[in-house]
Image (cartoon, one colour):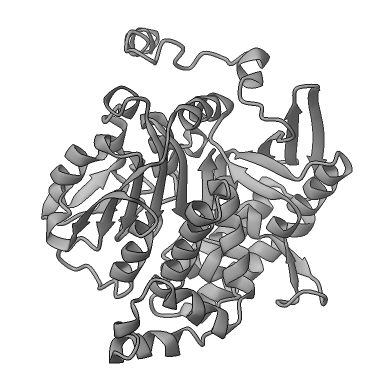
Length: 410
């Protein structure tokens, strides 16, 4: 094993592979007013380590043990596995799971952060804690439109796999201008279900850029995307995704093609080395697809997932999902995100959380008005768009529609 580690350390940028980070290494990841929160789950309970330039505070969370977390996740993934045939059971599992995360974990953590006047924090969940949308933990609150108060209503939470990757992401963000975008629009492959709102989503996205390239459907092949990606500063993928929980390096985005050529894998992305090939890296990747935020279960502490792999490859920030998402609500959420980021100039992570709260609380007329901003007037009377507007009369307040996405990096 020592010989293998020594060989890996000969590879450029991997000189400190598996080396223990010092506090000075962690200090480089600090941003003013934004602590790092390491979350650890043990048989005796959980522990939050709140790290700031002044030191480390420990917050013991005795009620969230390994057994209680395991029971929560068994219920969660059992319902998820059956969601295609029993959607209501999956919706109930999301409700119950996020509710169960409030009292033993997020409530005491939020109280601690607020007592120290923090409005934002970077979560670094370890092990199986990374499978849950911690920002969507909730408690009843009769004063809100949904009757609930969610964790993201109190603190602006982002995520990171570790301090070193966060430090690297900050450097990439500081030197990268998000002035061009590569957009992938519904690649076609065998067995894939249609994404009727993908074209609308991509249309709204590229409208916020002067320099863009779209690979629609048959053009969105694995080789074409890999060749084009180093030439753009933002990647937007409106497609199907899949998490391989046993072999996370095979997790990826579905492209047009057959067999192995139909998946743009995490291994492919790691091999890109975008920092060198993209003159400093990519500012942002939006993975508007299913399961793009899940990591492997065999070695969950290794934090191997598409977002962490993209950070390793040279991307400063990644928005990705923890489950199979709704095509309609995702189109509305992501198009709203780009409006807030590109037109209203919010920071990307703030734009995402603001879009999530907006979708959760929006009235149907607000949703329709938003979609009309990127659907040309001559198209408004079409039967297809009339069906769209009828669909927007649905209630999107349930966390299933907005909480799957989280923001990793800066």
